Length: 263
Image (cartoon, rainbow, N blue to C red):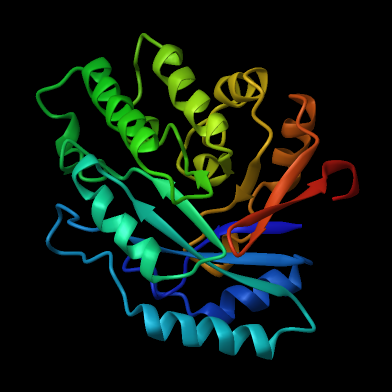
């Protein structure tokens, strides 16, 4: 099994050393993990800086890859927090760096972070969702350098109660993703944050499959070792029930596919 969304203390919101997470992955029988550390340029909360030393990250990845090469495969990834005004900076980053795997996520909309709740002030839930999905659609149209779209419906985690499902704009987003040969992730952290599903929710997963989407990764979004591989068995069963046959892993930006029946 593979966990393709993991953070270590290279991410500003995580204090867990890589080796603790790697050892946990080995303990629970994972074959492969991918560290996907946060880079969110221009993050609106000045108390946290979502950037890190990329050279040090590369050295540490190489070190643990060598140390644990006979026990688990370790890949070098990144999770970038896109916004419309930041796309050129991320394009430059991708020209200058090499990653096995890139998650394209949106943690900030209208230049306001979702986490603090400020984004939802003076907006109805529907207005907030519409803004979020409109900016996400723009980003996936204008940006090429990613592997999968991360936790597509993250906005639900911070504010619930919309009367609408926003499937029209989500369909547009998914069509662009599919046309570009990209994928989406199934992020199991939704269960940990009180949602009744992973992210995206089952209806969006089914929509993606109905549109012809085939590339999907699975990730715990772990910031502590104890949640590596969280709810993976249940999630694999769900994917199978929706008609997915494979999950993907990546090396040097290229996907490989693993049959669900053998996991």
